[in-house]
Amino acid sequence: MNPTRTKTTVLLLTLVLFLVVLLGCPFVGPTTISYQKVFQSFTPSLDNQDAQIFFNVRLSRVLLALLAGAAMACAGVIFQAVLRNPLACPFTLGVAGGSSFGAVMAILLGFDLSLSGFSAVTLFAFVGALFAIGLVYALASILRSYAAVTLLLAGIAISYFFNALVLLAYYVADFTQAYSMMHWLIGSLDVIDFGSIEKLSVLMGIGFLILLSFSRELNLLSAGEELAKAKGVATVGVIVISIMTASLMTSAVVALTGPIAFVGLIIPHIYRMWIGNDHRFLLPCSALGGGAFLTLCDTVARSFFGPTEVPVGVFTALIGVPVLLWLLFHRRSRG
Amino acid sequence: MTYFQIQNLSFRFPAASPFKLESVDLSIQKGELVGFLGPNGAGKSTLLRLMVGLLKPLSGEILVEGRPLSSVRVKERAKKIAFVAQSTDFPFPLSVWEIVEMGRHPFLGRFEMMSAKDKSICERALKLCDVWDFKDRSFNELSGGEKQRVLLASALAQTPQALLLDEPTLSLDLEHQLRLFEIIHTLHRTEGITVVVATHELNLANRFLDRLVLMKKGKIEADGKPAQVLTSARIQSVLNVKVDALKDKNKMSYFVPKSQKAAKK
Image 1 (cartoon, chains in turn red, orange):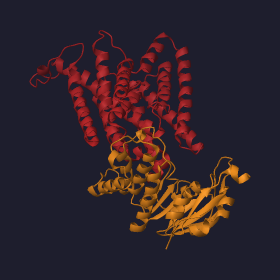
Image 2 (tube, rainbow over the protein chains, first blue to last red; image 1 turned 90 degrees about the vertical axis):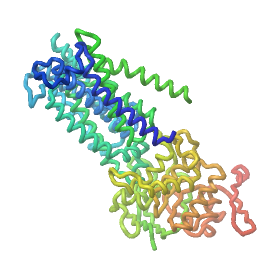
Image 3 (tube, each protein chain N blue to C red; image 1 turned 180 degrees about the horizontal axis):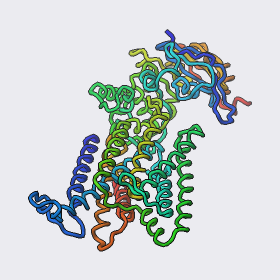
């Protein structure tokens, strides 16, 4: 088949999957709700329990999962391309370490403030993530090098540093605090209000368009910095803007959900194996596929282990790793 | 008309490496077909990279059509000057077509798609470099010589005024070495492209190029028509190899290296 047609077909399939997940997953859960009742317009919404569950509990969570998965998968694509490293993920430059540190500090110090609907943990996590990325940039600009190796090393060093601080906080915390910290660190999704979803989706939409506008430059950069320069890419500008955008998107999401593992690493690779490395298709496919994947994982995590739920971060790895391995073997057997 | 004007150019790498280029002066006319020859470490590749703007000179200046290269924006520069480096594997392989498409990047706006004209330019470049048949294959699966031809096609897709090549024949088989020099020659003849090629191929350079610049240790040793530059004595002093010069029936010289052992006797 014509390769451009393959890429287009996969993109359309992923879009269908995304829509099915968006419309289908709110119906799945411990309480069964009926399709007819949800959209019954003559019952006042306050008395319509099914509609309450569908919209306020499940749909908001599904939307958060779709946005979070999309953001992390996109950021994964960007970090892998710019750092030219298949092992890179949205957390490689310290976002996870910084936000975790912020969150555990908020829990440890017992802050109980909230700002425009966001909790202290969320706010601290966001600030922590920005601080970590800021440190990586400061290091890179002091060294006057935005080369992949410099950024990678700076990012890993800063991640380890913050992880050590997280462990220290965990060690001195009491039992309930330690439980909250653990819960946050695994990464989980919660019900949030539609106002926050709205703000988040505007941020994600803008970020995604910026990244998509760089897709040709990313093709060139992922092939090599010298090649990119020779073909007219202002490499430093593209590296800084794309990493900054991807980091901001990840920070915003991680502040709400905690560092959910594997989505940002595995989803890009699944699509790389399927359609290749053309970022004009890889970015939208990963965004839609990442959103759908995280939502499916979260639906499993919240539905089948009643009365409790399992943090989704456990499932992304438990489901994602076999899928990746299957693809790896499948591709090898095809030659 | 002068295309490249290199004035008093100096360069060294930041690390403590002994290599340096020192006060190089060179001017290349529009439409000239020039070869850089010299032993490893002579500075051929470095000079090429300075001329494309991939490296920044320590002092001195490079003018392109009278304008300082440092004042030309990267995208504008890529519309005029194309560069072919030696090929390496890509961490995230692209298809041959996707790589050749990259050559159109400088001509496209942020969200602009390739037009029919862009596509036909790519198609022509692929066919000219004899890589059309595997346009849908992954770059990393190709042999070294095939990769080199794909990179040349990608450079030609830039429809450049000047084409700079760094040892392009290195991993090519005999047929494609000859073919590459013929492509260069044709482009030069039909479209008046300025070509600068760093190479070790004495005989191909002698046969196809208009002018040779012989370099050693970051300095220009000789510069002129191939027949004037390539003498057995000079080849021995610069390249450190004794050669026999054989003449064919058209009085064209061919250089055959003598065995080092035999030379010592």
